[in-house]
Image (cartoon, rainbow, N blue to C red; front, top):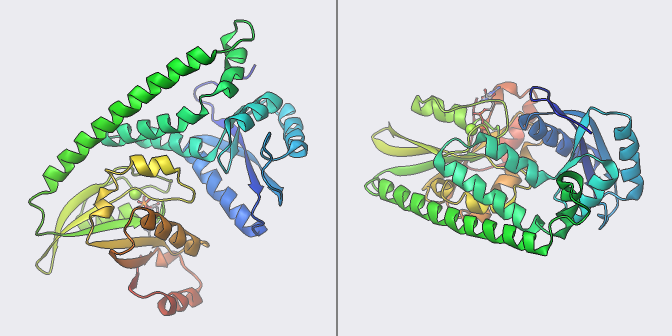
Length: 344
Ligand SMILES: Nc1nc2c(ncn2[C@@H]2O[C@H](COP(=O)(O)OP(=O)(O)O)[C@@H](O)[C@H]2O)c(=O)[nH]1
Ligand SMILES: [Mg+2]
């Protein structure tokens, strides 16, 4: 049996399936980002495994051969406690993988939700994360999970029967309704607070996680919002007044976006993201020093579209110019993007 002592970091293997025939470079970049997420969640990454150019396997996602390869790798390394997949898995895939590899299996949404849960500080953020977690859990609470009780519950081989699963589902559904009601109340408070602020110009800082939004916010407003070289350092929106050339402005710092953000997470962060939706102007902050900054721009623009903000006036702020060494990049941005600033 594997035991995890509290202070020891969990040792993980990252697994990616290249089902869309992406270049090696891009798949590697995606795994680097997944590693940053894993580090943020408190795990240490020992191996990264890529399964190339095949469709997802219904039973094991990555296919029998690859599963066997990982099983052998893990068998020889007791320290590895966890496998993290760069996509979402079905409950059946999770069950099969856990049964064969005998380690904990976490998918991308599960990992992001876990990080959000540890990062949530305010009542609003906590409520939103719990709602997203329960919504993630609900469809996964199926008979496929019976293996867990076989392993840990002990009594016979039955596992929770349909009745138990039904009861659990009912409890979760009730909790979900309660959390939704709570969020409606929080949203109402928010809109009451924002009445009387109609004569302010509302500006929201949005962007990929780690782009430098909070740092810029702190500079502009002389505040002290938590900024860190980690993903999702800030989950809550913070709003401050400032006056520039007699223009009264309300500036908001917001939660960052990332590739493949779980959809129920975006939905449950509706009230936090209202700062983005209600903005008169959006400042899209970009980490210009990142090799894949243009992919980040696309992810953010798609997320903004999903939020219904594509018509809001937008300025792009190419940040961290101090860390950009290739000057052709600067010319390229000047010629390609309208409405942009380049700063650090
Ligand atoms: N080199 C450089 N680093 C920056 C700049 N702005 C922010 N950072 C760093 O980028 C990291 C992420 O910043 P943060 O403001 O927390 O990003 P957020 O996730 O978008 O809010 C921090 O380590 C910052 O110190 C910049 O202009 N240049
Ligand atoms: Mg931030």
